[in-house]
Length: 447
Ligand code: AVJ
Ligand code: FE
Image (tube, rainbow, N blue to C red):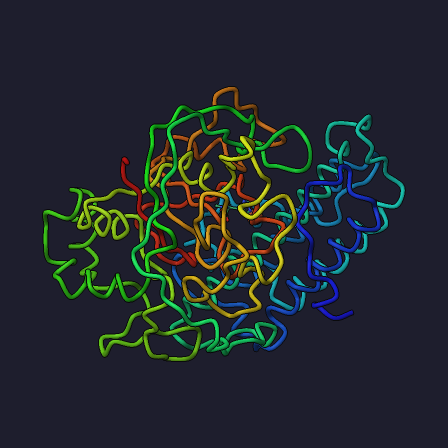
């Protein structure tokens, strides 16, 4: 089966998804995970590639253990295959930095464990009732989507670890379109879109899969605001650097300046001191039309301040991505209710990196913004917390334990995000000093 044949459709819409479709998604996720490491040497999979990331072999075993655990919880009478491994693969108990020292399975064993659990999942799915009247874990195929979403999120995490590996690892061969078509190149300049005052509907509605932190849908009153038409480009960010962006204290928050001084940061991660940029094992010219990538929240915030702007709140981001002012309703995606296509959004790893601003006019949102979904995750001003009326489901360690701990919300997905994850209600989060995500930003201001 080719990966292209299995390109996952986003979830949602049909609920519950037919079992054959769920099975396809499980197979696709499993094959993608294996394809990400297939060209690597065992030693590259087994050792930590960066102090802030897990070894790839840990991700492989963790994906399997997560599925092993939840299958046993969801299928009556099924005992986990390898419960003795659950502690080693518990993300809460073992922070990423210390995972290199854990007794996790080396790559060949981790892959074998993954294959065994995957076979169990496919067999278990056949007999289970996923209709809305089934038990809490199986109704609407919730737990099955949970396995897919989990593996898909780790697919992106694994790519982050590979990019962090000091230029030692090539991009996986499956990211085949590593050369971006020139025809896409365009710079649209510092345009903004205007969004009228009024309520924003934020969060996932009752149907389809969503994580607990995306619910419940609620209304947030917003004033009129302007949002950048597209993510901030390398060209604009380079001007900021050349204007002394990293030397002018007045553009930084106190916390941000502290970060800058401790790090000695002078430019985005992966920009070289001779003005180029590293992508996996290649050093390339800095393309001014591409969105700036691998900046932390503090850098994004300083850039915004230098331009008399600020970062958008997550409600502002979501309104710009989903609100159709003329129709007076919320859309599922920026461009409408249909799922992403390669013409609408740069997702799923296949482009090997972000696309130039303006490259995908078909992805325009109803308020006229581009690139909200795909290309780069976008930092928002908002701290990660539960929405009003939040209820944990099915476990607090997915999101609740992170609420109110200083993490910032990111929206929109990147070029490496699986389409199943890139829905506009999805909330990613990270520490404000982290730059390993495929992350950029756009600015906002009061109208
Ligand atoms: C939502 C991306 C922050 O990677 O820590 C994976 C997703 N949770 N396994 C993370 C997740 C459990 C999570 N993020
Ligand atoms: Fe995980």
